[in-house]
Image (cartoon, rainbow, N blue to C red; front, side):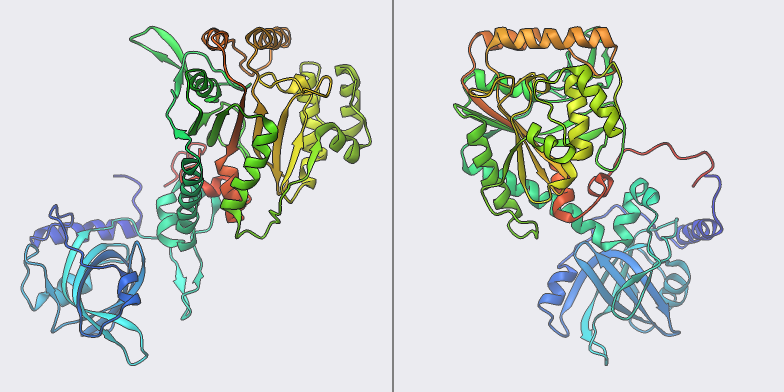
Amino acid sequence: MTNLSEQQVIRIKKLYKLKKLGINPYPSEEYIVTTTIYNIQKKFTEKETVSIAGRLMRLRILGKASFGEIKDHTGYMQIYFTQDHLFLSSDQIIKKEEAYNIFFKKLIDIGDIIGIKGILFKTKMGEMTIHVHKFTLLSKSIRPLPQVKMDKNKKIHDAFSNPEQRYRMRYVDLIVNDHVKEIFLKRTRIIQKVRNFLDDKGYIEVDTPILQSIPGGAIARPFETYHNALGIPLYLRIANELYLKRLIIGGFNGVYEFSKNFRNEGMDRIHNPEFTVLELYVAYKDYYWMMNFTEKLMKNICNKFEINFQTPFPRIPILDSIKKYTGFDLKEKKKEQIRKICQKLHIEENIKMSKAKLIENIFEEKCEKNYINPTFIIDYPIEMSPLTKKHRYKENLSERFELIINGQEIANAYSELNDPIDQLDRLREQMKFSERNTQDESISIDQDFIRALEFGMPPTAGIGIGIDRLVMLLTKKKSIQEVLLFPQMRPEKRGKK
């Protein structure tokens, strides 16, 4: 170990002293826990004997008696040590009279993981406390925690707050910033609520391949790897759409998957190269049905949120939205005309961008931020929707919607294109454009998917919901990194501890 801090050196010396005393600082035996701090505080019974384990978060040595605070996975509790009553567990043998003065006072640090057995009592101030009789060191911490101070109201000051450090060392973030754990508990509850809703409808949760021979189902730059045994390149999936449609073709009525997807693209506050999407496909439905279904789903999982989820959500054609917020009518406009409009609006454009990309840029820059309450943006131009059915009533448009909440896209849904000839033609047209303009995004034709469509896919509605963005919405976080346990980070600079 190199580049050790002074505190680390001191703690490592303590580690070796413990071993010389015959105390294993990392014992293997099971430690019996009889309850949790939450349960103790909920059903406090004075003079009850309890055994708990957790991390020592605070320690105040007062001579022959000391106070500390232990934290388990459910909360914090005050603990009390006295010279006359402290014993070590049977496997950590040390002279009785030395247990407090040598072992506890000199060799234990904040951050150590400990097991304690003791008797419940209340201090003169009425604080629930454990008088520790038996003490077990379960894991010695040789790196000190960030200095976190609490006032008498348990309010944290000087917390571990630098965002880059927090995301990089999430384990420390979780130890010292209690609110962070609640974000991820809430994420789990959100996912479970969605899963329960879909299961109650009779839809089947499935798993589809993460390693794929063709990066299909979306337009994006993939991560590429190589399979030595097969001797072929493989790609981390950018979408699971085409596999789920294969299952609809195979006879499933409704399937869904919480899919880890990967896109080798830029990172910002709403984009991470690895992200989670829920995709659902239901046979014999269309995008009108899916809008109604989405309203019910969102009301079910968001019913306690302050954003107005009153149904029905507004349904606004995307070109009408663009006209409202820019003054430009894009109907019947060709690519070069739209490029000139982008220039007037000071929106990124270049000759390599497709018409679809230009329209998308205009909407994202000028329109999306205006939709705070849930709104369906509907009827996208066909160029923007290569996997979507043409609109049954409106020329040059498709049966597609996006759900926008709080100025962000949360979901994307279609009446799925099930005409294999039309599908192949559209994919070929996309590929030609890509080859002419050398775009970074990957566009591949999945011939097996086309073959599957040729066997016949029933009319189908499909939707993808961005789970990370949904969690951001429901936890009021402005950065996707806040709702990912381990977001992707740049490598640490050399020499940084």
